[in-house]
Image 1 (tube, helix red, strand yellow):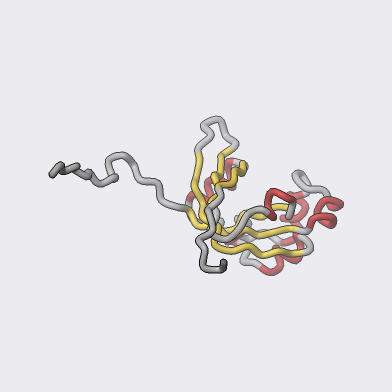
Image 2: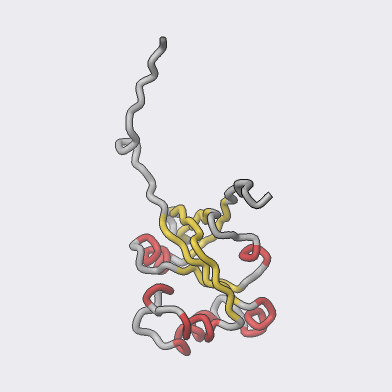
Length: 137
């Protein structure tokens, strides 16, 4: 049933405030994580509810437009534009060293890594939602 429409799944992820702001501004286009079971369940067309870990818990709705798997963070950051992954002006080595706060080298080797390309979906304010008048005939 290839022509059947796949149901869109919404996934939840949290992110540090400094990276959240880069995603929100449209600068950071990839979410990079180890390729664990949660990431393997994410598919192109699905939605990510990205939650800022700051006190205000601001959220973004992201549409997954591509997924690229890599064996290591080094291969990933050597392959993708640094600006698009939120690390413009940084060396791959310095980025990978920073990621060690979150991911061990053993986990990286065991799971591999994934770059999830996303685009921010616009959220309409209540004032922007067009008024629809119901007409009874």
